[in-house]
Length: 89
Image (cartoon, rainbow, N blue to C red; front, side, top):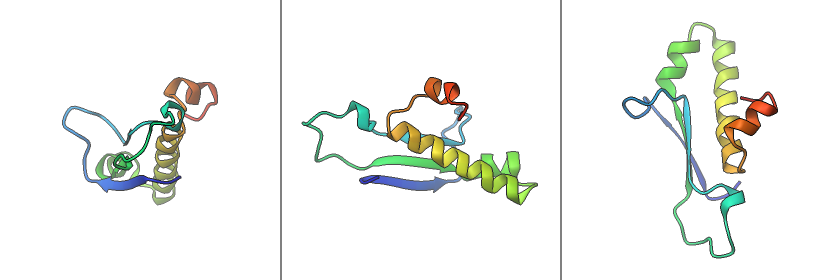
């Protein structure tokens, strides 16, 4: 992966129950004209993950990994529907 920023923020935007978010143009959606753009961004939201899984350090680690991989999949153009089909949602 290149030109992708991975950041951790405390909370998702108000009213959005998210653990992570991919923002950008997936690799599958880029044409030869793609270039000179800001990096794509993967945001991981710390507090929702801690609220859900913070009581078990090992589970928290696994869930953080799952969320990061989920958002990376979106960078590669894999939709939520396809992730469900692959049993990776």
